[in-house]
Structure formats: structure tokens, C-alpha cells
Image 1 (cartoon, rainbow, N blue to C red):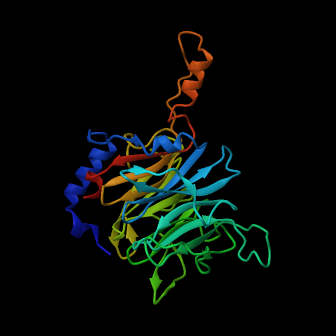
Image 2: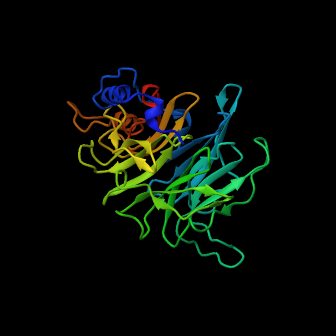
Image 3: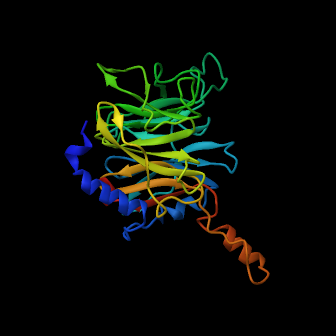
Length: 320
């Protein structure tokens, strides 16, 4: 695990954060991700890109979340394929996929029964995974990651480092607030008892959906209605100071965050791109004349219409 002070000088870090938080970096431009696919889905969230960059998994949901399935697209002749339901999804409420560093395991969240042979009753949300023998191989049947990560409470949004340390969200009794971020180290082939990331990250409110960098040098996550934010959920970053200690969260600023819910971060280091989910809206509610039905349809069906959508933004400076 790298200590941030050995990666970049403190002065440079503060300079980069200042540019990000106060809008001085004009290179930051949020763009829709795969809009040709997402616009045909009521609600889309959670991006997982394979280490090769040739596969993407994401979550498709109904308007109210009564349906939730993981979809799969692949790169074909320089374009993304039509989405299909992942072979392990489509029956239960599945969401929040994340690739292992070698691309041979995919973690996700589901409310499926632990053993369908014993009971068809759906349970709380747990972290599950599927695996394959090669990047061209077939995915296995889903397996529950089990204790000590999964409990009788809900576990969400798995994110795994190069050392297989897992960061995830829990609303269990060990949480300081409503939702907190936990970490479990992978030692001698098994996960240790999870611990809260720490008070510099977690609060008595909501902190959730954290992306851990492969070397565990930084953590990007959502804080809900935190003082100094833009409103609803905003994306923040904390840096690893070593010895299980983290810097206080710093907002990613108003060039990335919006007054609406911004969440589910994922960083592709190869392209230095942050992918995230947002419920931002550009729909106007004041006009100087009556709108036609076509005008209303066009406005309602714009990409930034208040529904969960996928976005991307280059964040080269933030990751130095």
C-alpha cells in the first residue's frame, strides 16, 4: 500500500485539490457514457469495466427499482455490442458489479436466496461473485462470499484492490451512521473481520458506494447531504495516509458533482477516466410559450432528465 506522501509532494496535492474544488481546471468535462444504449433503459447505474477494457457490466433498473438486472456489453469492431442480461442475472434483484484485478472474477450484490434448493425466499442484500478460468471463459454459477463480510444486514458496492482487500458499504449495527464504508483484508486466502474505514471518512450520516484505487492510495465515495456539498449525494475523495488512516473527504467539486444524486464511482486507470452515476437534470420548468407534445417529449427524453444515467469524465490531474 502506498503512502500518498511518497507519491506526490503535499504542495502539489493541495494545488490539484484546489483546482478541482474551486473549478480552476478547465479540462474537466462530464459527458454521457454509452448514451446510445442508456437512453433505452429507464434507469442505469454502476459501471464495471474489465481490465482489458473490452467488457462492461452495468445495472439496468425499472423506474422504481422493482426490477434490477446486470447487463453485459462487449467491444466489437470498435463499437459496443447490444446489451444482454448477464448469464448469472435476470431473476433476482442484482446490481453493483465489480471486476477482480485479473478480470477472472466479478463481484456483485444480490438479494437471491442462499440455497434455492432449500428455500426460494429472497434475503437481504449480500455480496456474491462469479468466476471464470480465462477472460474468454464461461462465468460460473453465483457464489455467496459468505461471512465475515456478509451478515444479516445489507452489504453493498464491493470494490477490490490489487491485494484483494475489499471495501464495501454496510448498514449493519457496526455502522457509525446510516450507511458506512467498511474494509476487509484478504489474509492467507480468506477475508478478515471487516472494520469501518475510520471516522475521517465515516460520519453519523450516509457514506456509501466507495471505489478503492488498486494500490489503495485513494478512495472515492458518496456523502449524502454533507455540509459544503451541492445537495443530495456528492462524490468525495480521501487519500491514504498509511497505518489505516485517511485524509478528511474533499469534494470533487461542481464540475463533476451536481445538486442531484451523484454516486457509484469507478475509475479506469488506463484512460484516467472516472465513471459514475448521476440523477442530474437539465429539464427546464419555465418557458416563454406553451409547449407542444413533441416539445415535451423531446425535453422529457433528454439524457439528463433526472433518472439514473451513466457519465464519464477525465480526471488526470486528480490521480497524479
